[in-house]
Structures are given as structure tokens and as C-alpha cells.
Length: 578
Image (cartoon, rainbow, N blue to C red; front, top):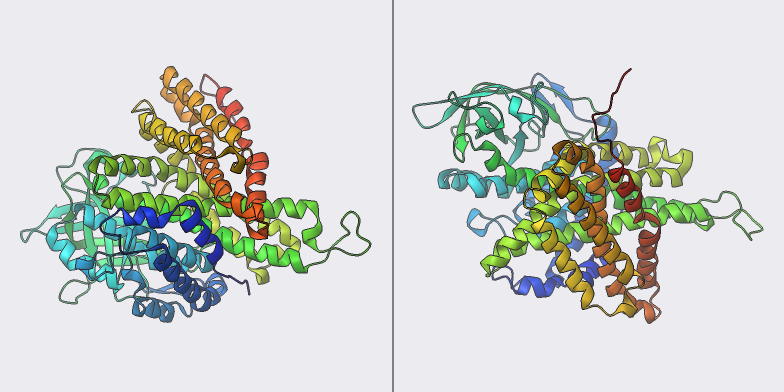
């Protein structure tokens, strides 16, 4: 069975040495009593629970999958008991508001928990973490009555939320949604229609589901501007079953333990969340949290794959490395070292990226300075499509390399690597494909404000660099400014073109370049934090510097290829024929 050891030392390095979490949390009135030591204790316990209780279920989930019969879904063996323990230990309430029965901990605490769960079972994490995303939606848009009724239930985990957006004819183009809602005399609504790809929308872990459903009112304008959001429970307040039916589950290439449901609403009772025809605005907090969660899933899957690939490379003997007179361990081979370093660079970089963003969310929500809150929230908005699109794609590379380290043994089920590769593939698809994230970044976040928010972020990066001692930067004093200058140059070129088709063609390479720019900044900060201790002969910190150097010299140059491709994009619509 694959193993997982919580990466506590690297997490402590990220929280204390790179992000200086204590200082940032101390400046937030709602978080001032929470220290980095508290967060590390939470992480240690979350890692213990995930490794002991959840990891053993992961291969079982892959083999068994979920089953559907007569409208009922059965999750894999062990999932109901593990979820009951998850609830009993209070994990669903970690970051829920105190007034809703939650613990009121920083968003950073959820980020750490989600990494641990995602490292041990992508499928279990889908059920365990969705309520956090749904709570963001209700806190943002639901009426006080709905919040009072449903936030405590989400905090205890007694209900599991689902996001019901997609329909057979309406995938990412949700303007094509046909589900209808009609007002009822008692203030509720009746929904009629069908949804697909609703993760966890029917399961045997909780008695009740809380569906958040996009639908149209009779007077709705066409397109996405005519969508409204509704809360539709599986069970009504008197315990009777609502007229929501699960017509089946998808049979997928991976993530078999997570039920992906087709739902049918037959005059189902629901309540409006937010204003009429403002469903997308009400849903955005949940969607954005789900996109950030996808980055944590990418991190978790990559971490488990890296740990097991490293173990295998240190015990498996194959071939002779240069200078060896006997069969060598895999790790002695230069190409295996290359693959392991690439995995480390993607994985450890993702760890800083995701938890730094979580800390920014805490600042945006709780800092006493309103101007700083607004500026930080804008930065989080800019980073969200990068985290989802960039980190999800990086995980594909990382997991493919892990499989390559195992060779043929990675392609068989026993090692568990092929499961991780299958499970991770969906990361680039749900919550919007990579191309959709790229378009969101360039066409909605960068170009409309003439790159003002992007330039604010880049200025903050330059400000940090200006205050850093070059002797601890190990090459970043040159590489980081060059990377940021390239990003700004390409952004200016696209601004001057004022060509929507050109921007659409450029968006995906632009996402890769922007992602590298942020990751380069975070690897520069990691290098700066590790350098003094590496100079004192700390092998662990020297390993961090070696990984940073590998990223800087071997992976970061991808931006040159992407920039060349972006500049050479066709100026006309290409002809594609069979």
C-alpha cells in the first residue's frame, strides 16, 4: 500500500520561515490568538488522522468505486465510518463561524487540513471539504434565516453540500441552463429540471444533502445574466423527502470513490439565495473556494506520489550508475534525480503558493485596514485562476514523472501510482478547464483594468526583492526581475493589440507565464529563508536550495518557450480540416 508521512518539517518552514504566519495573524483581530504553533498542532493531528484513517481507504475506493441502485448511492467500504469519525472529531467546523457552532479558525487552517486529506484520498476529501466552499456562498448571499438554518448543519457535517450547475447541454457555458424555478405562495420556489456532474449530490455519509442549484425564474433574461441560485435540500424540515432524485452516477476514468451524480428535480422545494437573476454572483464565492481547493488537491496528490517515488528510488536497484561496479539504486541515476527534483519543485512550490493564498484570504477578510482588505481581496481574485489552472497542470507533470520513476511497476495497480494519475486528471477539468481559467485571468482580471492589479502584485514582489540581501538569493536577484519583466512586456503587448481573438489565443500560454512568475517569487522567498541555515551546514535546507535552483534553471525557462509561442500566434483564424 502506498505510504504517506505528513510533511510537517516543510510545513513549519513554509509557515514560519517563508510566510511569517505569526506576524500576519497577529495583525488580524479575529486571528490574533492563533499562533503558528497552534496551526502546526492542527496540521500534525490532521495528518495523523488522514494517514491512519483515510489513506487505507484510498485503494479500496479506487477498486470498489461508488455504486448506484434505485436512486441510492453507496460509497466505498469504510467511507461512512471514516466520515462519522471526521465529524465526531470536529474537523468540519474548523473554520466555520463561531456563531454557527464553528471554531472560527483562520482560512489557513482549512488549507492545511485540505492538503492532508487530499494527500491521502482525493475522493474522501471531495465529501469532507465541500461544506467549507458552500458556507462561503451562504455567508456571502443567503438570507439571515437561511444562514441560521444551514450554516450550523454544514459546520457539524450533518449535511453534505453539492454544487448543481452543469446540464447535458450546458457544461461550462452555463448560459444554456434550462432548469426552471417558480415562486410559491409561502416564499419558497419549485424547481424543475436536470443536472449532471454533481459531486457528492447523493451519498450514504449523511442523511441529508444541501444542493445549491442554478435555475431560471419565469421573467429571467437570456444567458448567464438570467440565472438565479436556489438552496434545495434532500430532506425537508419535517423530515420528508424532497422531490430530488438521483438518476445515476458517472463511470469515470478515475476518482471512483467520489459519486458524480445525475439529479432530477420534479417540482422540488427550494429557497432563493441572493437576488433574483444574480445567481452567478451568489455562486462565485463557492466556485472560487472550489478552485482554490483544486490547487490543494493538486498539491496533495503530488505529495503522495513524490513520497512513494522517492521511497521506491531509494530501495529499487536497476542498472549501473557511472562509476559504480555493481547494480545501483534508482536514485543514483541522473535521470531519476532529474525527475525527483522536478516533482519536488512542483510540489513544494505548490505548498507555498496555496498556503500563502490562504493567508492572504485571512488578511482580506479580517485586517482592520479597509484599503488593505480591498487590495488583498483583489490579489486573491487574480491568483485564483492561476492556482487552479497552473497547479492542476503542474500536477499532471509531477504525477507522470512519479509513474516514470516506478517504470512498469507504476503502471500496475499495486503501487497505487496509476490511481493517482487517473484521479488527478480531473483537476484540469472541473471548476472550469485550464483554458477557461486562462481566459478568466487574462480577459477578466488583467486586461479590463489595464493590468493595474497585476502591476500592484508585481510591485510588491519588487519591493520584497529590494529589501533582500543578494547573498541569500542564489541567482534570484537576476532571474526574478527578468521573469517579471517578461510578464509585463507580454501584458503590455496584449493591451496594445486590443484584439479579443488574439487575447483568447494567447490566454493559455499567458497563464503558464503568469503562474511561473508567481512561483518564481515564492521560490525566491523560499531560497532566502533557507539560505542562512544552509550556510550553517543544514542538509535539509541545502536540499531546499538545490530544489529551488533546479526550478530556476530547468523548469522556469518554460516561460521563454511560452513567450515565443505567444508572440508567434496566428493573426487569423486558422483553418482546421479533417
